[in-house]
Length: 291
Ligand SMILES: Nc1nc2c(ncn2[C@@H]2O[C@H](COP(=O)(O)OP(=O)(O)OP(=O)(O)O)[C@@H](O)[C@H]2O)c(=O)[nH]1
Ligand SMILES: [Mg+2]
Ligand SMILES: [Zn+2]
Image 1: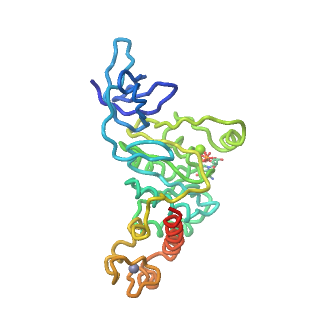
Image 2: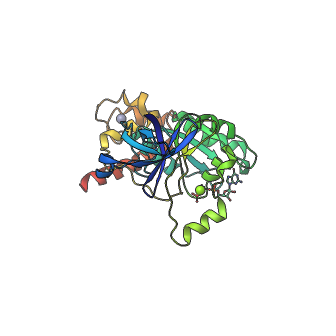
Image 3: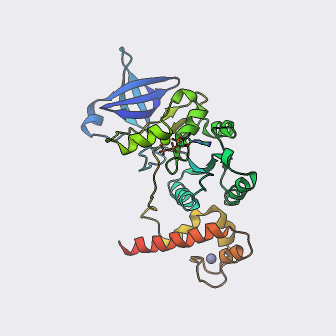
């Protein structure tokens, strides 16, 4: 019996990577009867038959399970924004919350660095470094940051996320040219045209690691299970200040002796991050009421 990782499921088969090989596996017996739902990223024990194909015997416990994209055991999400047009900090902050909620490490990637000045790069970089996230500055045109991205992806299971057109697929192609992911015009046209089936798939990188490209999106809901008292725990930069708020249930909005608000007014926390926090808090409260 071997232990491998599912890269994708496709018309009844699962493609399972074990070391440098990918095995086409089927389900037999109880797994097929149960219609067990296996996801890319799942670790499975499988048996190799004489014809070289495999049979999945069982699934190993999951660390987590994302819904969009449906992938298991994701360790980090590369949140890609373009520097030109300006990055959407609202979307970045939402994605970091979703990631942390699912026990996934967010990595912030600002792409298209070839199109803006060093000053504006440092501005955005500073916000997210002080928010305590790893930040990578990239350009697929002049190649900067690609090695850094490659190093971050190495030996981990990652998902690349962000708005449409920010360069997600281009970045993965730059990390590994053999991937030949569709980018730019073609990608746009296909999306608007007839229904395109998009199979979720983990791509093996030759430097080690698995990564999933995702189509861009424009809207994104916060997890409906978050309650208002929990939201600020998904802002790592608030952590050291939260601990000093007078009330342990402080929501850092109007409460007296709130260290988070003090930190914002003293410039120790980003006003932008704080304002997004307040807007997300309203949203979380509305969601709570609708249950
Ligand atoms: N100037 C510049 N253009 C880039 C860079 N990276 C990507 N692009 C361009 O941006 C456009 C969109 O790139 P894609 O890689 O398709 O973007 P995407 O995020 O995968 O988009 P979706 O698949 O629609 O979500 C293409 O025309 C790329 O050539 C970059 O670093 N600098
Ligand atoms: Mg793409
Ligand atoms: Zn507070």
